[in-house]
Length: 85
Image 1 (cartoon, rainbow, N blue to C red):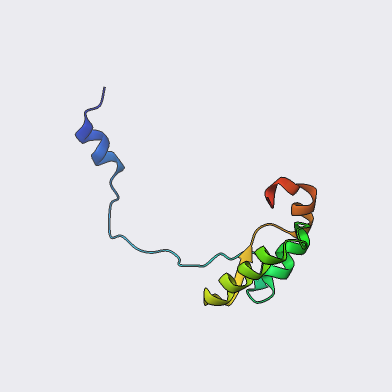
Image 2 (cartoon, helix red, strand yellow; image 1 turned 45 degrees about the vertical axis):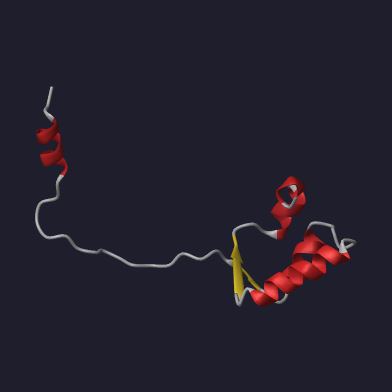
């Protein structure tokens, strides 16, 4: 059985360390924050909750976020309604 020092030594890198790449991965679906409340309440079929929608619109306006990126598509949310609740 190998000792802890031998295992640690075997896992160490040899030579100088270097960064191979730096990148940003963003999902394809991009929504402007100003349009997001309308989209969200339409997709989740909760447009009748006007007070909640107004509150959500205020939150979106005050957040200072311009764009919102999502992995979920409208079709995915409609196929799986439990995601939106």
